[in-house]
Amino acid sequence: MSDTFPPRPLARDDVAKLVAAVAGSDFAEQILAHIRQAAEIANFGTFYVADMGNPEPVLSIWAGEMSGYWFNRNASTILSHDLLMDSILHRIRAAKGDGLVIERWRPTPADPISAIYARDQVIERVTVSSYSGRIGFQSFFLRGAASGWITDQEMQRLQAALPLVHELIGLRHRIVGATAQGATRAGRASALRARDAGPFGRLTPREAEVCDLAVQGMSVGGTALELGVSENTVRTLRRRAYEKLEVSSATQIATLILNVMG
Image (cartoon, rainbow, N blue to C red; front, side, top):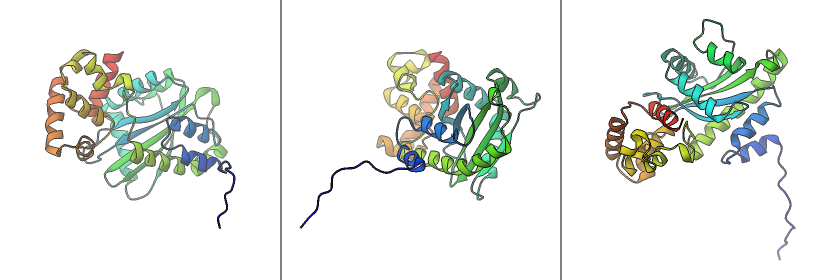
């Protein structure tokens, strides 16, 4: 004997819907919508570091009122500034072994990032940092000037909501990898090589693939598994590609992609 029941929609609360969206293309937008239930946030993004032993942060996911072009442009500026990049890595390292570190921060005129924030009318930032194994990442949530300072009640709600959000962003990295700067279809090293755009035209197809994966934050070992080659082959391909592009890191490749596209 068996019973067949009519199909019915899944009953999902807001958290379950967010978890179900982790691998989806609109995950960033859903994260932002969820956070806005706690406080009005203009933009959010995440800096992802695949190997804290050799840290090369990339902007991996973002959403908000700022255009993707300017969000990536700002990230490139930040990651090319030693003091600003060091501050990101310092907060990530501070989270090692202690779970998550949440920080509320307002820029002062002396801060190197103040000019960027002033131009984009950002007055306040909340960051969530974590460091587990070799992987570190920092999610940041930006408050726009039109919304005023974050209130104590909003901050309490954010402290309750952000740990889950940060964990889900980490889960997405493990499932689908980082959608890093310049990693849209048109803005990949492979696409630029095919168009013979700038120095990318000098790459072989395999070298361009390795560059794409490096920009996405994938390690040498992960790239070897993805492409079905040895780690030594990946290192050789990276070295050749970096020499042709005259760069020394995946972050510099991401910046070069933006410059060639722009």
